[in-house]
Image (tube, rainbow, N blue to C red):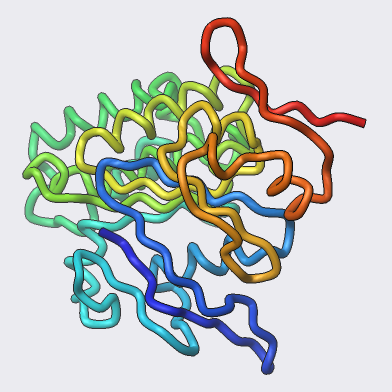
Length: 260
């Protein structure tokens, strides 16, 4: 479980997060929704340990995040940020292999190297493995970064330990095909003892793939629950200032439509 207990995060006496308590568990794909400036990225950074909450605590596996050994934490929790710039001439294969740096004794393992190859194929970047990262499109770079993050926790996951994958707008640079391929992969990983937490802006991707939706506005959590409970006309009007409705299609799936 990854949980926050009444965390507040302040900068210059401004509360970017306000008294937030949420729980996300292994076996679930949790999606954070909210408008720009809602505090979504700040929450992810507090969950990952990049930022330290001004008040309150963050817990991973019921242990305070600040008490985790950095190396052990890195083997169980990986992060993909919005922007992943690389200023050195590394190729795609080298970037993905960086996920193994936390396990130096195993970095030359034939089994792990095979799994790295498999991960590149799974993320549809195997054909790019000799390309310099800096020459890739934004969407291709994003897929490389996600592959690296998955490789980072691969050993712990293979040993049956719960792993945590935190992603800030992972679909933002992806084309339609790769958006759905990624969301299907994240859903699959969540069913393999991963706790996946992703910030999205596409409400319908959240409806289709999320197990839990965390709805944020002005640094606060407005509501949490399953998508068909949280993505309602009233909540969307309150949080996003849009008029719309959740409709059930003939195949049983649901879509949120914005109306004029």
